[in-house]
Length: 117
Image (cartoon, rainbow, N blue to C red):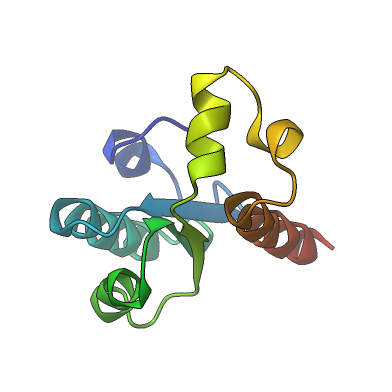
């Protein structure tokens, strides 16, 4: 889905299996993530997985963990290979399949597939 809370506000109970809340380690992004998690809980629309994107260090990840303490969080490191692939209009998995960001994102995919079985 597109970014934002509008779609979430219209979802009905049990409408989706998983809600992926993607946030970066900025206070504004974390605030929106908190609201998205709260909305998903209130509406009981599915399981929640937080993807902490562009994490540059442990302090950044800790900001997300502290703001969303009861949530499962998978961290995607800030990865120059992903930025390069984007600039070159390539899929990161094709351009740099062993880069830290791509490997971390595979954890998200595996987690979702695990729940589907």
